Length: 204
Image 1 (cartoon, one colour):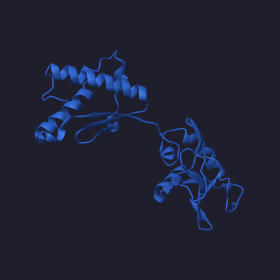
Image 2 (cartoon, one colour):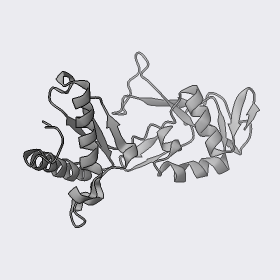
Image 3 (cartoon, rainbow, N blue to C red):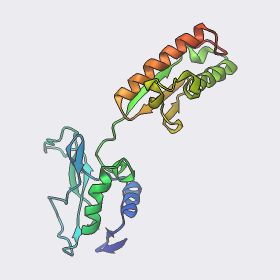
Image 4 (cartoon, one colour):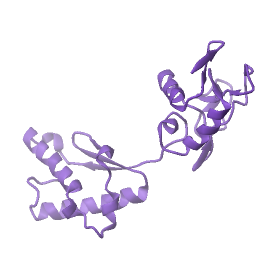
């Protein structure tokens, strides 16, 4: 990363992402739900010092008296940095991946959530609360309960996509279909195993 006129110049993708994180800025993207793009700023207030350098738009909120047509309620404004033309070409390819650059942009990453809430969890003694949480974890990660030929076996989330809320769990999926299949199978498991007393404590 270099600097021209006190404005940084980026030649490396990770340096740009780190800068966006540090400065709390989001790269402004436009396009369709399944295909966004980053384009050079269309409203420059300062011309690039070189034909090889490009300024990108970053996101901003509404300004009084100025209508924002974007349904997201945001607009773009010229950034305080430059990128090389070579990096600009690399950005679009990287933007299609759900990586660090995507997370530093305004293109949403779509996720679906399954929330498992345990009734009156806070009213249980601490020891019973631990048993309930451990039982839920066991239901999800015990292969015996997820039949190899059952479509739900491929829909279990990785452990990194599980969030313990204290009185239950939130499971994160990349698609609503996967979330629905998982939720239906887990609900059936809980009902059947509680009725058969296969869990150390009743879960409701």
